[in-house]
Length: 394
Image (cartoon, rainbow, N blue to C red):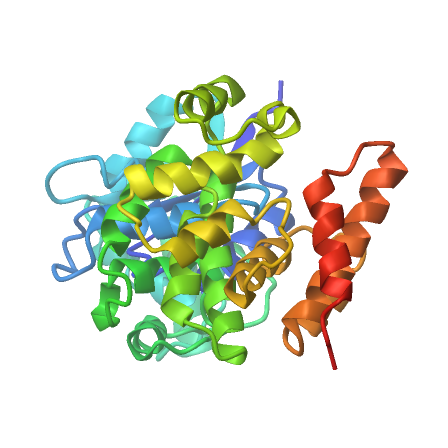
């Protein structure tokens, strides 16, 4: 039986950015790895002043959700004391005794390997995959060092990839300024902003507490989706002159009940008389908005009626829904990690121009899809579309 081929990408990930992801995906494809463990450093000896490990891990967790083959790994952040790579590799060999390990590094790190603790032992524990990066070292120096380390038993493979040098400092500055940036996955930018990391203004005072609860309540993909919806809802609110903080808060909380078992959602709904609509009670896809609005109020401390209304109406819609409701509803359907579906690009384009037109296009697409499957459409959705067509839309 062939050995599993496991890549390892270590780093402080403070925060994880597109350069890290690009390197991991190139290694995954070129070496035909089964997976790449994204390994945030716990307490690295050379970087004493870094963001708390749990926050760095959760940003990795959100960024990797939905990216096949990339897996967040807690191996270093759950260990006490100063963390050394030689110990991590030894532990991973014990954990995966039949696996071949590949450690992903940048070209500059190649020149620093000799400074690693027990580096000659490290050379025997993995194959190094070297990514080209801008570095102060000359190509001749890099080649000479690789040959020297190979002579000591090291194994090295050079990855064929474009140089994508991204400064973590620039990424942190963008977060501090509240600026959209292609350097970071949208989920990472939103997590950092909600948690108040890197000097970001604390727009949501309850943000850190909400993130902690949502991290434990949701699946990885749902947690990632939630962060992307919050970012998109805020962006739509700013475009259309709405309250961006309310939109962001509703986006963060809109799926807080999504991963509850249907029976638990039904229990909450019946015990608190949230709905008598049997079609909603029998569908987790619909009931989670009803239950979610209730939990947002009772467990997350949200008492703003506009935010609760946006959470409540984000599945079926409702006639008379506010423009804030529409922004949250659309953010849920067009956030950038959404898998492609018919009309997605059109709805995204329209959302930047007119919330009402985007709602009509999205609802009409939804109705066509549901009817094609032979499923019944909830009356509230039909009524919402009929109401939207009565509005004076330019």
